[in-house]
Length: 223
Image 1 (cartoon, rainbow, N blue to C red):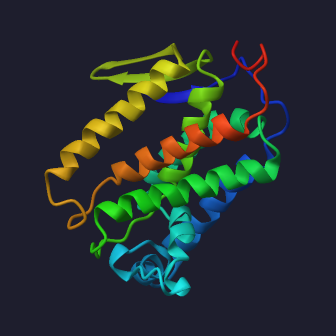
Image 2 (cartoon, rainbow, N blue to C red):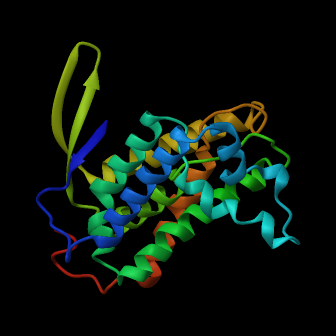
């Protein structure tokens, strides 16, 4: 399922921060794929758990920089589509700076969650998935009844449907939990793959943030 829009519900204000985050992610990805040394670029700014030393602050910046790197065009495209569809309405429920804190904070929590489970891994972690998951978690709390126009891809079949945000995002996080649980039984952290627990950590961070800091509930928000 690929979300297309939440066109029936406009954000409270123009989503400057959300659009800026998308543009920054795209810009950094362009730098990443055009640099003469892409691998060196990734290892300089991605989160490599084995390099983290909490007594040395200079090793901790990848918890932020890694969320602006991506492994492929498909990787960044999927993250930015979800951020575009869900992030604007979430931004409208917070002051702009607070939404930025939600995004970055969720990304950091996601990185920490994955790090705790594989602290000796030498595989670089990168991607905005944990931060985007924070926006999804907040949306799950703030707009559970919104209908998301969704592209459904099946073998030899393509259609669109309107799916409740609570069902779509609930399905998404359950899938992350199941997939992450499967990864625990393997060699997580020693092979490349999807950082499912970064998604889970970011999603939970977004839920908690929405509970604590969102505007008081209004009829518009739950419509």
